Image (cartoon, rainbow, N blue to C red; front, side, top):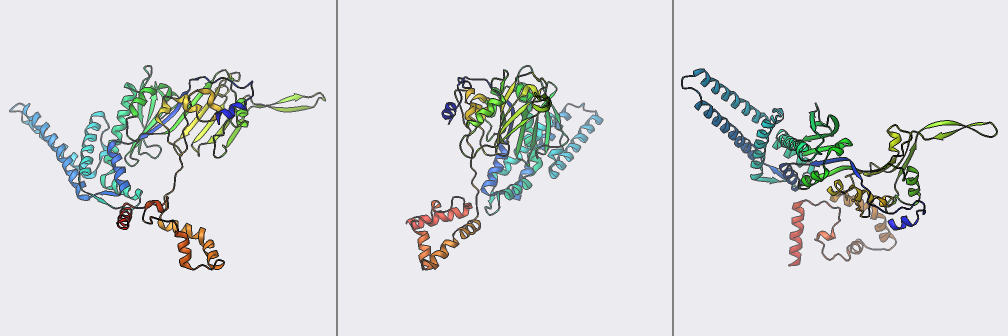
Length: 473
């Protein structure tokens, strides 16, 4: 496709392919702590934690906390003077109050009300992780009849969202700590400010600042099973993306939900008009459906005097022009716009080519963080001038899973006329019609001879396997 497009470019527009540096201008990531990934897996296979295991795990975790308090109390009592009755009683009072507070927290599952200082959070996270691991070691029940969402809600209700909030908060805190010590350029200092409410459907959130300027947001919550972080503009400039990539690539199931890749043409050699020419020559056609577009220009109407002394008006786009190809709904949107004029300088020739990718219909590789030029060049044939190496992110097609009743209903609608024709015009009996439809099926109990979109519970799949084995013997 790229070579065909190049052959249609006029000689004046054709330029050699060079490796032009590009940048990441927006980045959003989601991930889950290891314990919450196990919760997801349990919900997928239909497992449910028994109530007895939950109670036992909570009591075991509470006993560990109380034993720790008792050891602290004994160490403090040893250091008190033998006849200092008041100091002795003060230690006992602190111990009794702490025991009552912790017991109340465990009974009410009030993890979310804990002081989120580093020390308290670390202690609470360790206790929550111990309790969750204790639950996973116990006997589980399996129910495949319920939907995934219902099974997940059941697990969250039984385990306790507050406990999972603590695990997610620990993940978010560690990420923020690495911002200043691992993920950032040396010239930036990151600070955090907690928000009163969550964002993007997450229970908790905090704004991220680089050198005092707003640069991103981080969100977390057990109900959402993980954490979300987003950097825009300055936030991406302040990141050391190579270090970030080296760290996050080892996190299980981490996902890029959005990334913006940008090429800045400061000389304006590839203007919005050039982009429109590329579009007319098929430079934004990558196969499949034709891309949607939108062209916008803004400016002033100025008077133009003709020879007949008639005054006419003409459009002067001195406030900037923009070409949009694709859409956010499809998860792929290219913007070509006059960035210099947008920033307030009408004489600036700066043009930005910016690709916005979302994970709604594609899996965005983590390598896009460190190879923006390759992935931007591979997005459309018209962008091939950016890099000799071009990486293409393919669109994924999601197949809907259907129930037996839904498949039967669809097939009845689509085949009833054909069956009626076979009865009326071909004078075929019902048994002949059935035999005609089933002709060629060699393994009726095999999954290969059932509809691809049929959603089969684990128990029914095992039953089919047994039937297939019986037929084979």
